[in-house]
Image 1: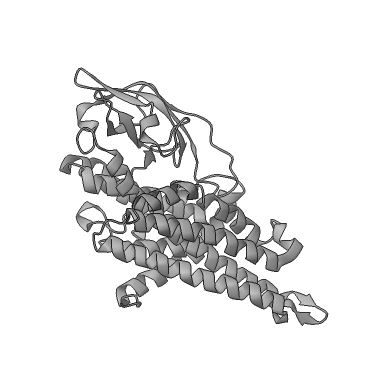
Image 2: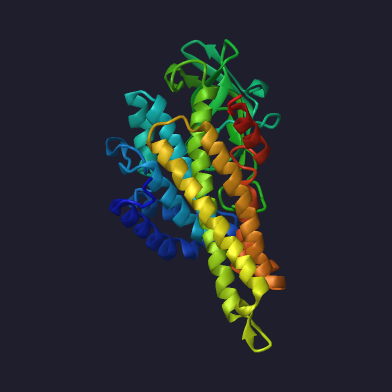
Length: 374
């Protein structure tokens, strides 16, 4: 077992860290307080190759690995977690074209995604279904030389400004297929942007499709059996979310230490108190366990292994741990922890969101139990 990052991974990690601190720090209020996505950052994300990290440069990617993807997510989330969510969407949608797309589709969509010239959102969830494919009501029916898509997708990141959406819908046979729906097509619309607890500025909304006509070439990966494609895509999403939580925990520990060193109590910093020692020790220990579980998951993904169970275990442990760790960081701050003047308040709101995204913790437990040996 080798627990060391390669020299290339370490260099990449440091470069992303410098980038995040310099370029993303000024955008915190834009995303969190204004609940707005800062489009001006996209050329800089592209320059850093952050929208297609594990993909072949032939298709606009950085030619790195999933471990590097996790490292980037961690470093960006330390500074601005919703921007890491935005990067995640780019990497997940590019991955679908990489795995399922024709050469024509890769040129038309994957390369522009990695180059920041197109934004494609990922749309499975609906008002009446979360993780159950049988409950999907969106349909794509054959009509002449194409398909007619009808339905509503909910909680879609980048939905308000995406150029296209990857839509999971029931085809003529009642099976789930994956369709590319450009957002400028007649009958496509979006509902208002969601005003949510944390991870703000990611522009969540509903996608509404009312008799949207798309050509035959807009089916991705052929007809049917795309729930398996969803599960594969979700492994990347869960890796990204787990790495982001590691970043949040690291930021929380840093803030808690900084606060406790400067906060005085009877002429001594509260850092000297045993009660604070215990909180900081728990935070550091849980963070390290979460970090290496996440790195292991990325390693397994890089080996080409089936990681559905491992990613579910990682996501379950790391996201719930993040809520505890950030909560302890808030406890170190005392009453000041609830003030928006302190970073820990935002970190706490963001941390809770991760237990609910890409399948709730309850769903992860079901995925794990179904794959345990009997």
